Length: 121
Image 1 (spheres, helix red, strand yellow):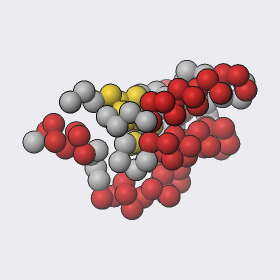
Image 2: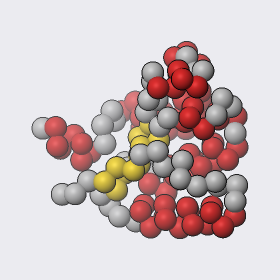
Image 3: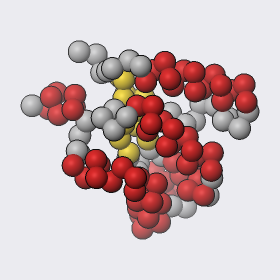
Image 4: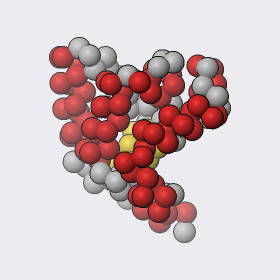
């Protein structure tokens, strides 16, 4: 089984530009229809110091989670990489905790996505 994991999904387009945003979301919707495609939501501090307060970033994360569903997405902090953008572990943890709060029950109960669990056994 081919397993595809999209990483750094948020860096490819300026989602405030309408044409680029339409292209981005069209591509993400097509990828989300492929059952063996997963998305890793990570390295958000690379967007900027205030990424956790940026409505475009927050909306993008929630929309991607909705597209891929709870079984085909996962969050990672990429710590200590975020330190280069001024994000220490406590502020990074707080920001990710707030962002992932709606998905906490699922995140707590599934440390690995199902195909990765199968590959590791």
